[in-house]
Length: 161
Image (cartoon, rainbow, N blue to C red; front, side, top):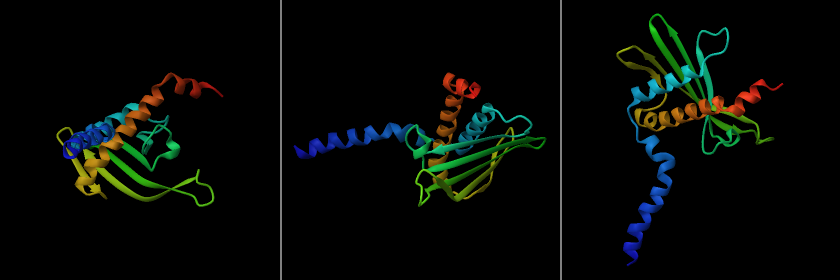
């Protein structure tokens, strides 16, 4: 009887935590993920006078960036030879005297080049299995920030003095 209860309970407990991670982290097609991240960052748009697209994002649980654990900077530069994207992920460490202030520590870099036919990973401080877990989270952070920037409340805040 106890075994049957455990057999039912374990999938329920694991299933309850799976949606937060499950579908996003099951994707391991790294070139596809990198193309999607690039497309999302480019669609957010650049700043006036810059010939590249860039964005700053945060990884971690919840909607409040205050409690995020990692900072992500993404730079996309297009030129006549193709497109290059650099992703820098840093761990956020609270300051000793003020935990609201966080310092970026241990930056790790991913650099890739895009052509119509392929995505070439030029450099990665992450092994492939870690990239398979990291890139879906980066894509989610970019999509979430894009949605926030497109929200009516964000447009009102941008207009207000």
